[in-house]
Image (tube, rainbow, N blue to C red):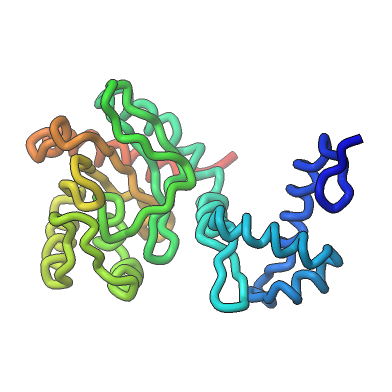
Length: 260
């Protein structure tokens, strides 16, 4: 019989690695957000070599992050947490509307929730065109760049603060890096009720977005359409904006509707 590492049968090795990875991740909690490798060895009882190997993999996959000798939960897990916190209510309410919007405009449409200075994709419907913007559920993107991020900042002061603390990075030459310019853009977004950005995160990609509101009038998500810049021009975005806003409003109403 072929024996895998740690004396595990090769055919069950993958399952055992997943179980051991889960045991390591389970060591982290609100009371123990940062741990050293030695702490994890003591908590799990796993061999030091096994813990070291799995820790390297988890860091490489952004499930953990390392600062010096300490490990903490990575952004990828944070993204999953954000998706879970967004809840099935948001996804259930938004799903048919997002699909319908995609069918009408034929561009990639999606829902984002905020996590700190980032936005996380929790729902998407891909364009039916050959040349498309391809995002994916769980994708972590900066608030600073893109229409969806601008929506959060326009309607949530905490989002602006988080983005400024994180730093206004020049992802492209069209990215907004001046706080005063950003403030004027956000004021314009509030006045018109939607956002349009051109090639802020990567060349050739434009987006248009509108806010989804929850109880109390707080913005809980952003509905966005992303597409190549040669199709989603400023004129095209202006023509699409009314549909995007109406769809976001329909999702907001669905969230606020009484539940049986």
